[in-house]
Length: 164
Length: 242
Image (cartoon, rainbow over the protein chains, first blue to last red):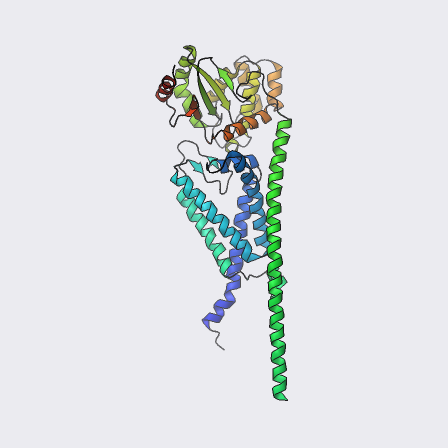
């Protein structure tokens, strides 16, 4: 009655994916929650990248925290996990591109990833390398979910009729 | 007969598999539609909330009478070359800039070469627990209304609180005002009543729209100085023709 390694891995995947799903949900909820209290500052953080005109940056800065929280909630309850993971990955790629851009332009900014961000004071070095490494880590979580979107305790599972 | 039963069981299984597949397809489709709708609505809520805050702010706006440059700055001197200084009273680099370049600025103003426009913006509210950036910018506007902007600006930097703390409380802001001659009750009322909070937001917003992303930002005749030392300042004013 030996269960093969392959079979055991197959059984473990929904649990691994569940951890990834809840982790990614926490990332979005925290990132959005820290920004939602001051939308004007969030707009200035987007403006600090000097990519968009200020009027556009303001709209992005206002919408982004709400989008992040919504995505976090979708992942938390496990609703359309593969699509939510895909959108998460797309956003993370955009964020990483933004940080690389700021780095390449020599801008002295806080990435605004987990804060209202914006400009840095004199003598404070931007931590672009760490910011990118962290976002790549989050991208891995999204990758796990894209590959194996079936998770435990999810609305998807209930709708699909999986054993919970 | 046994064969027949097996066939039927197999047919039943195939039908069930197809039904399950159909169900998964429908669930995937409709949950995807749901996700797109949720995200669109969330984005629109953000946009709506921000627009609401902005119009709320413009409703409360009161602009000090002496403000120049679309009501977002206070001028010192009346020379031909304009120097725009965007500062946050919470910003230590601005304090250093004022210490280093203050005498040069005074000299240029006294010689009638420049008009200095001070823009007190509030981008560092997160560095104090009491939104000191906004409160101090508002207090500076109240000082301008009382005719003492520059004097008050000087004492605010001289008494700059450390980052991460509570900043200066309103009583201290009023006391500093008194020390430069702002003894009128209207100054204290404006500080306590946060009369110029909306104005500070507008100044900050205007600066952002002009590409100011950090403090201090110093522009001589519209050109940003990368490193605003007193020497760079004098040189830029000379180059601008004064």
